[in-house]
Length: 177
Figure 1 (cartoon, one colour):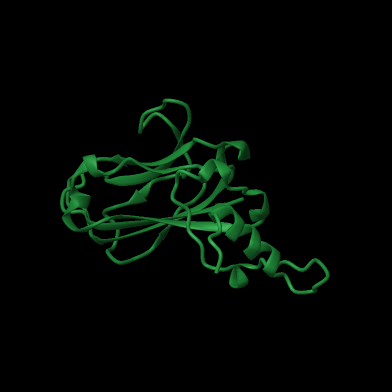
Figure 2 (tube, rainbow, N blue to C red; figure 1 turned 30 degrees about the vertical axis):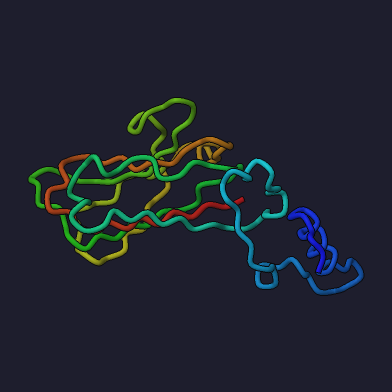
């Protein structure tokens, strides 16, 4: 076995797996060999071949950490252009504060701080709603371009009210390319 560089190994793998005369899509998700990226190589990854795909992000504020307002904020930085499509939420302990307690998803651009972005949901998730019940967010009626994320745009969670007794919050966001 020869001592190949990483680039030579990758080139060898792609040449071994790609046959343009084949009717089979060797690069379909189920057939793509396992691989990882270290984050530093993100600018070198081509996202041109991920068109019409979706990605699901999960954010979990575990246990009693969900009862502290400082535990919500930015949870995603876009490494590629994508579109916010949907959000759902569930919690296992409801808020007991006398006022409303809601959680919204926002798009942040430039240097905007959490709370200063564009809300993407018509109304926030009600953290005083029945526990263990999945809430589906309704997209806000705004220009479709507001749902587009450019490279470097961020998604964050904005909490309204005091999350007294809120417990174990899970938010799922769907993005498409």
